[in-house]
Amino acid sequence: MKNLIEKIKKLKEEKNAVILAHSYQNIEIDEVADFVGDSLYLSQMAKTTNADIIVFAGVYFMAQTAKIISPEKKVLLPNANAGCLMSDMINHEQMINFKKNHPNVPVVCYINSTAEVKAECDICCTSSNALKIVKSLNNSKVLFLPDANLGKWVESKLDKVEVITYDGNCPVHNNIEIKDIELARKNYPDAKILIHPECKPEVSRLGDYVGSTSGIMEYVRKSKDKQFVIVTEKGVADRLERDYPDKKFILIKSNMLCESMKLTTLEEILYSLEHEVNEITLDESVRKRSAGCIERMLKASK
Image 1 (tube, rainbow, N blue to C red):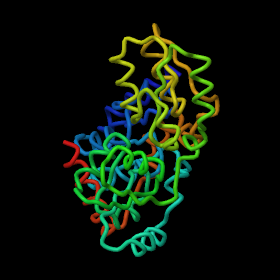
Image 2 (image 1 turned 30 degrees about the vertical axis):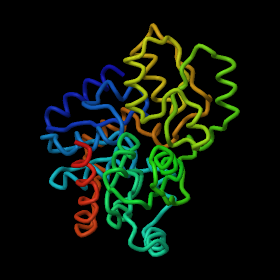
Image 3 (image 1 turned 90 degrees about the horizontal axis):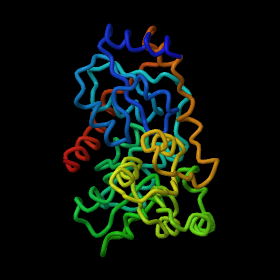
């Protein structure tokens, strides 16, 4: 693996390439990544990097997002099969119908969506800034898609704002039930329970902290506690165990795995850099409209 890592690093330098990696990726990807984080952070890095090539160790909508906001750069997705089940739950036609059923209501789309869907929305959000974005609209009613759980969690934090959600979810997070949290409380009474807001609202209400992947990691960094139950994808727990060996981390369930996120390998990253394959391309009219949606999010997140 050492030889593989050295080859990738050498090619990055030769081609002025940057590797962005999501926190759900296999942990060895961090060895070659320039930036590791959640969707908001990686979007910001894609926007500001001076690289000619962006290799996105993540899933399709993330690589699309990088191309949307950095059209002059070549964006590569090492594994073309790395998709997102939540993103697949809504297409352009379903998006149009959702808006038609609720006319004249501002539309917030979660970043876990395609460029075609983003192009029909007013503003984008991530789990890091969803609450802030919905607040920024200053409207009593908001459409939110595709993640119903995140939308309803946002609604629970706001007074007099109705968040009308599309019926989508992340199967990994949606799999967590109240009984799972109750069992964790019983088995680990001294542990803080940290929950991602893609979980069901009734589950999120039981957490000591609810936040994005970066939010969860920041909570651990600042906390003096020594035990944590991690209620999100395994990649977060893996990185926390690596970074804080003096603390104990319990993954809420052993099956907290996003299979698409685990598809990318170091070998595929090397191949994509060598041959510049699986390049992300977008229709320019769709790109421009979806860019407005993301740019408004980035501006509101400052």
